[in-house]
Image (cartoon, rainbow over all chains, first blue to last red; front, top):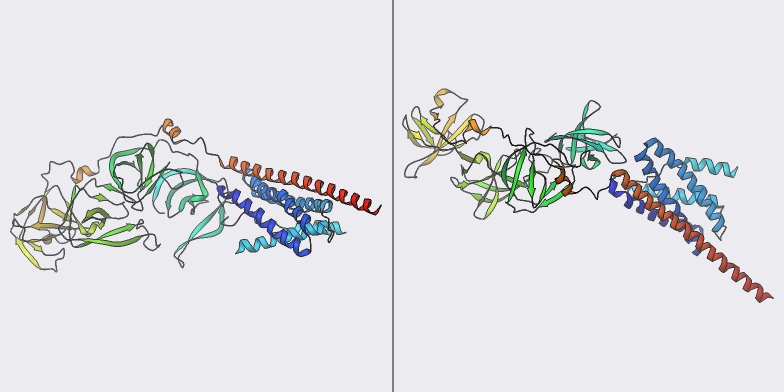
Length: 116
Length: 409
């Protein structure tokens, strides 16, 4: 990756994450305003999860980056769970379980797509 | 229990691939650079089975300072951990954006035959600062003094910088040959690439025309040192002729020391067309050097009806050598003077640097901070939006409930 590719990579990650998680949420049975919340919550967390590790890698070290990434992932799961608990109308699943399912799915599919 | 499980599972979620994985060559004037790819620079090794350089798992870490000594085909070479390694030129940034104190040689005219980029420094890693469009003859170049590199200094339309002659996109007015003769029927060729490694597919040769033997070409251009050829124009075709097919007009005479045979071709197995007596003077003839130690001296009779070659094998038996050099030249272009070093030097000044202008460029770290700030703005905007949207939804839900209750009542 070149430095000038970073914004495009961040944007691509955000779009892919939103698409994948929206699809999974639809499959689970969430609709309309709940889907909008899924989209918005990813728009909150994804830029930080993609941008901050690059920052730590460049300004500190790979080790710091990896630690930051783990912390960010945990924070993302918890934060999204809280948002889903507060704002989702449909209570099909426990909000933290939902957060876990959506994030693992987007991560897993992302790996497959990158592998291609 | 659920929360503990959730916590453990979430800890097991590994680092996602945030960034997509993509995520000797000719000498350059040694320069300091640093690895600027945040993921590090993959080390490339030559795979003889595949016939090309392949990226390995090993990387040079981001920020590592290196001293680059050569480059070829998109890779640069440097010493690392007591080994010579190759990484991609895109993964590094020179420490000095514009190199200073480069000593230059004498001016030389050049012809750009393909569009060529001007760089701030004499290596691929430097930024592009301009472009010269093909067909331009009005450029003056200067070699780098004491550095056997293909890069030359150029000033073009107010832009100063360096261009790379290695791929024969630019050819130089010959320093030593004001005229040449085509020694045998030859093809005129289009040559792209350096010819350093003929197996890597970057060297492309195409026939575009032909030129008959004994054609005289005045003021030819020379290709880069790795492609031993001249660039000429004949019958509206411009292209390269290999040096082995060319004879040079020398500035000294030859004298036969014995009866000397003249052959039709540059080959002692070909027909003898003439025999010269001892003491015959050949005045500043054309001479061809097809192989080491061999000279082929052109002979033309006074009535121009007989043309042929005297074979002078300098490393062979003495009885083959029937001509000797008479060095009565008053010219300054004889061999002894060819290696005269050029003493003029020039430095690129701070004023020129300002003209080229680094003011608008960001450093790597600044760029990352800007990207992160952009990401935070997106996050904050989304956060505000989610709060406002849900507040609005809550209000409309409350209103709907109030209306329902009213209807009931």
